[in-house]
Amino acid sequence: MGSDSGRKRKVRGRKIRSDRSVKERRKAEKQRRRAAKENGNSGSATSTTDASTDALHSPQSAAPEPFVSTDAVEALTTRIGRWLEADQPVHVVGPTGCGKTALALEAAAERGRPVVWIDGDQAVDTGTLVGEHAGGESYVEDDQYVSGVHKRTEVVRERWVDNPLSVAAREGATLVYNEFSRSDPLAHNVLLSVFEEGVLERPEKRGDDRKIDVHPEFRAILTSNTAEYAGVHEPQDALLDRMVGVHVDYYDAETEREIVAAHVDLPDDQIEQVVDATRALREELDVVVGTRVAITAAKGLAVFGSGNDDAIDDEVLVTVFTDVLAPKFAGREDGSDVATLEGRVADVI
Ligand SMILES: Nc1ncnc2c1ncn2[C@@H]1O[C@H](COP(=O)(O)OP(=O)(O)OP(=O)(O)O)[C@@H](O)[C@H]1O
Image 1 (cartoon, rainbow, N blue to C red):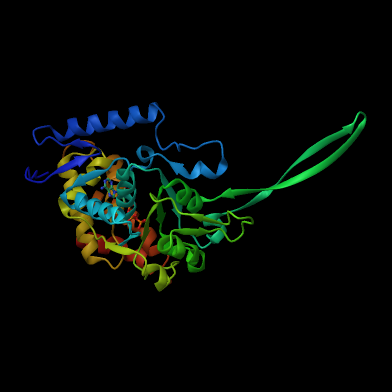
Image 2: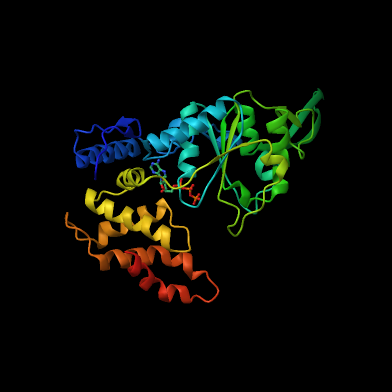
């Protein structure tokens, strides 16, 4: 892989020394990941016993693994981080599989504050975001007035559990709300006063703590694909008006090669073949061919491939990319596209 020593690039906190062999670096990265898994700090939430703060994750466990940071990536994480510093909610928008989530989690982790994660979904409503009553807790009060005379009163106390948005607002966490446009926009009305006045309404909650002041360290990063995809809602203008937007697209070839190499242990030349094929198919096919496609294809080639450093045969590349891309065509009305996909992939590779 042509190394341009002028370019800064590092994988999760470690500079890639231009004089270190790529294999050696990857082996070190693999050992580090295995050690991290063994000592159990892989993604465990720093949760307390209270169910509602299970949503809190330490910055270390929220940080994406592996994470490649080339100039292009660092420019984006820095830009998102600066908007968070300016206390602006950030909307990271771009095509499927280009790296939005990884960027959002990295920018959130770099703040050093706890991270709270929400996945957008049609089923998400206000309660899912802010919290709900989790049934009553009953206990008996036993008053003994005179010996032998007891007055027993059963008291039922409503138990409220804060959901992710309330936990993040209360604890000053960085909220990462992934694919938020998949949720019904009505659920997002509570975000308007959070972003604007710094107040969180919990409509279902009774009592004087129905409204809570948002912690001064609370921040939010929302990600979404461009709106033309199925299953997403056009976000309400009032919400978009309260955010800044960072548009991300597919990275440069060198960054994509570094990203694929961080996920899959293949010889450099084969990584280059995979990324070149991905980028050519991205140009030619009428579906989204993201970085995730390159990673999946590389994982396939680690099994289907030659197993040595030889270049991968075009036929093997065509078969692997046809299988990786087929699901994107299978959903089409006539379904004929899947039958012709192999030919079209072969024309490009
Ligand atoms: N800087 C990076 N370092 C390492 N891996 C990365 C990086 N950026 C993206 N990836 C990997 O590329 C793949 C796609 O990235 P990601 O899931 O962040 O994309 P996305 O745009 O959020 O996708 P979607 O639109 O499906 O949510 C993932 O496997 C992710 O781990």
